[in-house]
Image (tube, one colour):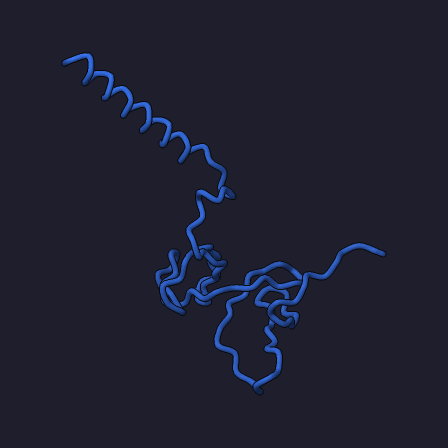
Length: 118
């Protein structure tokens, strides 16, 4: 093998090794690991939480493969993810959800309650 070809092969191997190292070592919270348009989701069937781009609503759950994956909001009381299913009700009123974990009602977009004494 010619020295020039050896050099090219070595450069390609070094670049591939560095790329593999970045994929293995990067933290889960890294922006490199998040896809554009990824949103918090929860499966209404199995409760699996995920962060991904939805192709449709509902989408297919990566865990149970049911078409029950919906965008989610966190409960301001306990932090559990709750599916944003189609909510009916009078127009002009803020929809109210009941948390699937703590059973308290909240409006999507509500701020988490502060803990501790003033």
